[in-house]
Image 1 (tube, helix red, strand yellow):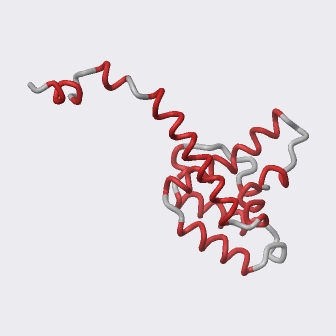
Image 2 (tube, rainbow, N blue to C red):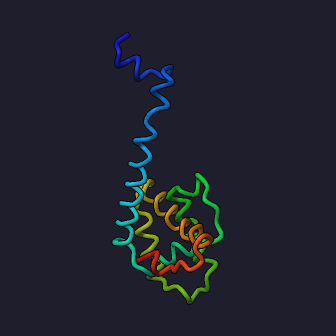
Length: 132
């Protein structure tokens, strides 16, 4: 067996367990890049709506999917008073969410959910500072 095949085989547990020290920082960098892009793509009102929609939710694997994110936002709109959010704001936000890739939607869900986790540790955290 060629050496490269040995290292890539599924039986090589040392190879399969290595790499996390390289992947995790890369994933964090990607998530922060996504957040930086979101702050350019979405308006402050839209970012506020996204964060508010993640209040009192628990982040689960399936909740980071794009369709689940859109469903959560639509459910939030149905709960909120009809006149408190304009139809154009709803349409604009949902259109932007539908254009996201799944990885971007996952980063956005984690970012919006994280505000409420930070708030428990830092009660003085301001949502306007978080979305700025």
